[in-house]
Amino acid sequence: MINEPSESSKIPPSPGQDSTEPVWTYRGYKLRSNDFTTAMVHLFRAEISRANAWRMRLDTTTNWAVVTTAAALSIAFGQQQGHYAVILLNILLVTLFWITEARRYSYYEVWSSRVRLMETDFFAAMLVPPFGPDPDWAESLAENLLHPHFPISNWEALGRRLRRNYVYLYIIMGMAALGKLWMHPEPAQNAAEIFERASFWFIPGWLLLLLGLLFYVFLVLVALLTAGMHAASGEVLPRYAVSDRGVKEAARAGKTSPRWSAWFRHGERRSQYLAFVITDVPEQVGQAVLNEMKRGVTELSGKGMYTGQQHGILMCALTVTEIANFKAIVRAQDPQAFMIVSPAQEVLGKGFLPL
Image (cartoon, rainbow, N blue to C red; front, top):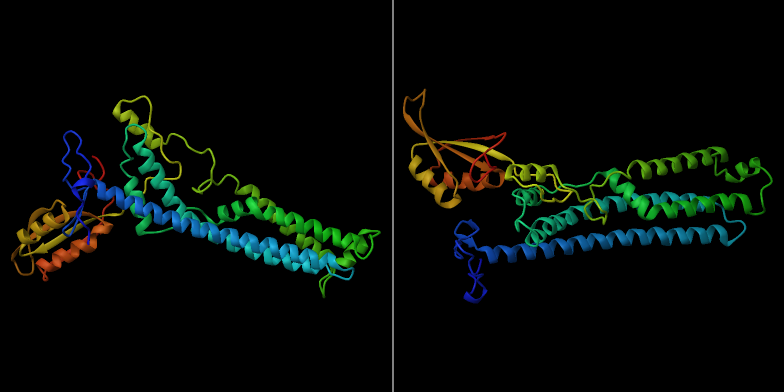
């Protein structure tokens, strides 16, 4: 249950604004501007907490990779008869840690992108003109909350973690493996001797070295080809620029300086639908939708071709988050109603995108 704000906590109204006007209503509950800001602050803190938890899991995976590498090198070089295959097995283990950390990094970006969205479009918007967020920032945040998805690709996650941490471990392990083959138990005299030492079980040494070379070529390609992927919102990089949306908005408003937008947001919005309700009590159903959802409803007249009876047809534009509530209202008013809900390509007008 939402408590009513005390008199001392109410924000003084600005000229022409009613302090008691709610900014959000739902089934009798009403949130005023100060309540909405408080809710956003709590959401911001919750998302930061989840981002920090996944950030710590990233550090844990890196620590595992460092510890196992140190242990493998100690075993390989600790005694003359130590085999370099220990380093090869550690490379496989570190690769598993790398893939695991990339997956954790993708989850970290889910929470980090929400934090950055609130920072750039809610808090930062309070500090610079026109002192208001972009019209679609709330839709972007709602879409992310309703339908969570990874904001970065698997390749970007792999490449970023490789360049940030694991490239150094792979370099150390590669140099250690070559050094082990060349120096132990005594310096090799030629390449054939190195190939002989590199053999392991029934696999010839030249094949193992070739596979190792191909693997390192693969690592270099992943590091280089993913360097241009900058969808990760949690990285501190100078990637802010004036968006195309900001340029168009400034042109329509007759301004010469467009507003700056966060580079990682692409103006997502909730899916929009058009609902038709065929009912014998259109006034009752329409008033319930108007009172509880504050959505406009248009009544049409229709005739059933089979029965020949006249029926009322209600038409209402909705977003994906309102469909469940709309169905419940219609069912409560007329359980015998017939409803059609279809996707809408675009809905323009009050309450939706500007016409």
